[in-house]
Length: 220
Image (cartoon, rainbow, N blue to C red; front, side):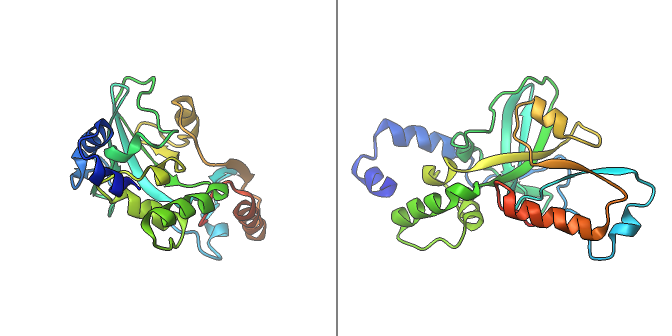
């Protein structure tokens, strides 16, 4: 629909405003801090890893698209994909359609926010159906659809109106960043505190429960 309408009314105000948001297409953004992958806790590692600790704060590991937001003097300055951890692609043109990303925050220092962009489970089928009707092509899953939309020049509103940004890290917190992120107005993943006495089998049960009951798709 978007493509056909743009052909018919190329000078419409709607398309001119949207084109302004597309100005960052193809621009690479170097991350101020390397955005590495998370370490894996493999079977048998838990007993060794928990030594010397009494309790842990654990959170859902979301199966989304990792993106980085930078705020300067409380205003959203840039948004980028994680890429390979050193630099990513500018995605500012899409961010205005993600309803839970604040464009301003009550914070005067520069800060970098890392999180996942993904679709809640109960909206995935609706989002995929809308995109399939637009493009005439079967969509494999929600994550791939969002990843593909992030790399496009034009913003597909049918994707980003369903997407949610869940933040889990910021550049200015040491240790637990969740309280700070929540105060700044960001949605955060489900968290819980477990004791070091928790066995590996009990930890697996927690993960299985979260995989079944989380609002979002998880991969750990």
